[in-house]
Length: 159
Image 1: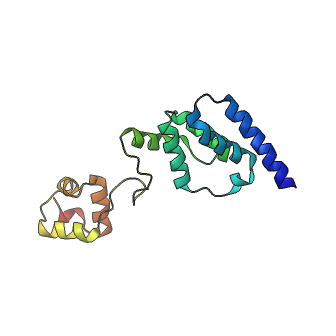
Image 2: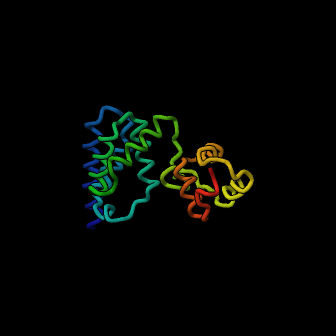
Image 3: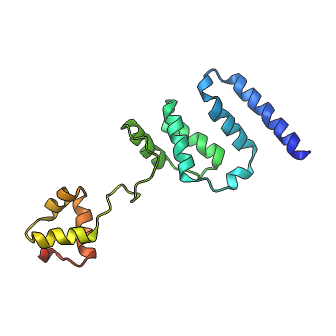
């Protein structure tokens, strides 16, 4: 009986929410937020990052701002569910035409550098510079330096 009453109240809220919306494209998202707000136990569930990324893309496609998206998500899922920097980073990716929601292997976006490949390159040409290696491998100079240090190839190995 309690669940029936709960669903009835939820549907009334959705009806009133939809009445106020002029933009019919938002129906789905508004209904989703109404359900999430009413079902407070969902706030306690762990929501996957992929779910949040889907919401970021949805909001971006509706021409919403990152700030407005942050406010909506934190209202629906709790204040610590996502942060400004994450949303701004994803919105920037979408603006650049990248709508792939999968995370890169390395979360910072740096290509993973195989130690063996780097070691062979240095052994083949010991006079190569860190800058040249970085250019060939498509990674930063800092990444090459860190990888060289990790495989015990000190600066004496390379000029």
